[in-house]
Amino acid sequence: MRLEWLEYFITTADAGSISAAAERLGMTRPAVSTALKKLEQDVGQELFLKGRAGVSLTPEGERVLDMAQQIMALTEEMRSCGNANVPVSFCVDTQVSMLQYLKETVVNPFKSSHPDMGVRLRPVYIGDVVEEFRRGARLAVVLDGREGRVIERVKGLGCEAVFLGTVTRKMFLGAGHPLAARDTLTPEDLKNEYIAYYSGGLNHISRHYTSYFAGEYRLADIEDVLSLAIRNEAVVILPAQTLRCSRLVRAGALVEKDIPFPGVEKVAPVHAVRAAHLSAVEQLFWDYLLVSYPGSDAGNEAGAPVMP
Image 1 (cartoon, rainbow, N blue to C red):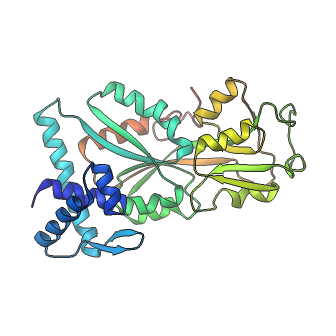
Image 2: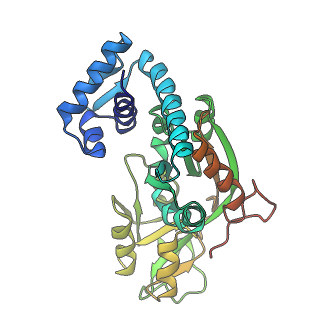
Image 3: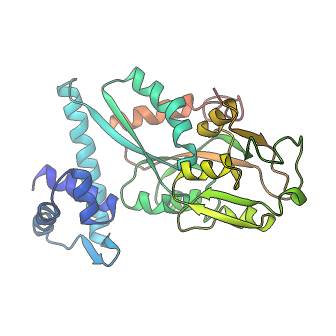
């Protein structure tokens, strides 16, 4: 059995398909497929079930994945101890609305203190967080996991979830929008407007807000979502910690308003989630995250995060 086979196996489980894994690894699909077959022969069990949408782990595959991750984590530790010049990298899942904020407030300062460690932020829809941990994800920052009981379900997988603090959702309109000059808005003001948001297959945002609007635009790119607002074609509701929105407000392209809908929760919790087994560098980042996330309730009593 070769270590690279375990790497290909873990990547395929994470990607959900052999083709996607090959692309991540910079290899051909046949090369990855051959390595996986050899691994299955060594283990003596089928590790993946193939379907139209890709591959999924068998029960034996789940067991082997846990052991493979531990072996690779130990290998990373041994390499980092033996050669300080060998870069160590790992991945942290988070929603696209939190990605830039997390990058600038936590990840970049961490990398400045630990330049030999690479941290990659991967955007994941809230509805896919649990599945990503089943596939081998080990770290995540989750905004509002109540839709679909995300926090409860990841704990059921043996993961740990720590409350970091809260974020406040705000409404953003184009600076040239007729409603932009209003000090306060009412549901009546917005009933002829459209709402735009970044979303995957789940409808977890519109379920709360779209009944107050004339319609919705569900887009696959956050920049397109914000462009609609800048062009006064839609309203956007996002966490106040979304750095893109904050910068556009400072630049005069967007204006920020309170959400006027009665009975709609405006404050959402943020949790840090970790798998049971972390490498030494992942554990280092986890400890840093808990004390360095702005306003983290895990590290102090400061309350909600504050924009830099």
